[in-house]
Length: 209
Image 1: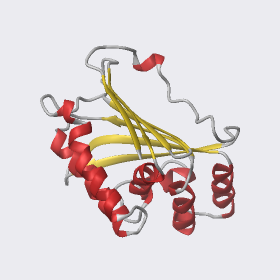
Image 2: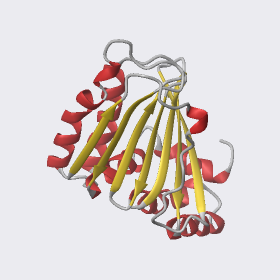
Image 3: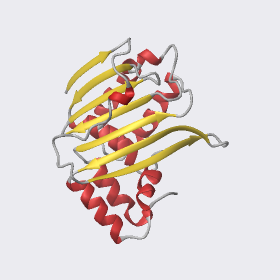
Image 4: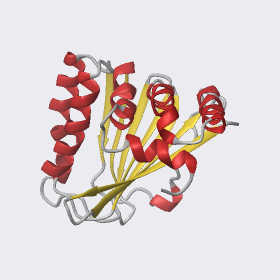
């Protein structure tokens, strides 16, 4: 596994100037977009939005599944399997409120554990990723996550690129990991059964919920 990480303390680019581009490895003429809103507490406080795009043949297969069915429950498992194993995909998280580093890491870990328990990622891969999260995002320890901050993921084959953008457009993290376990950890934690996101992501394929 290869890891290349760059922490950038200053403003090096604006978010508006750095859109998430389709992966070049796969056919990008076909894509599907899925969205989810994460709410926490009994008061349904909006925490973040997640947008996932799948490209290429898997996107077309997802479209065909949706066209043949009347509701998300009928295709949830099939769509999830296609998405989890996609090798051309992007994801973007936008935070809707302030979040501490511990809250952020604990939320990721909760869904990662579900992916591990489902056999999507191996236990040793889970251990390495879970241990690395506080270090990779350590720059958030002092000030935490601000409303409007974003994280983008780009998957090209077995290469995962992770970037963290502040609400002011500063690029604070630019990290590249190579290995199938990294893309499986990201997509698996979103689409595993009982994750915080799966129902909304699949449901969004059938229109507003």
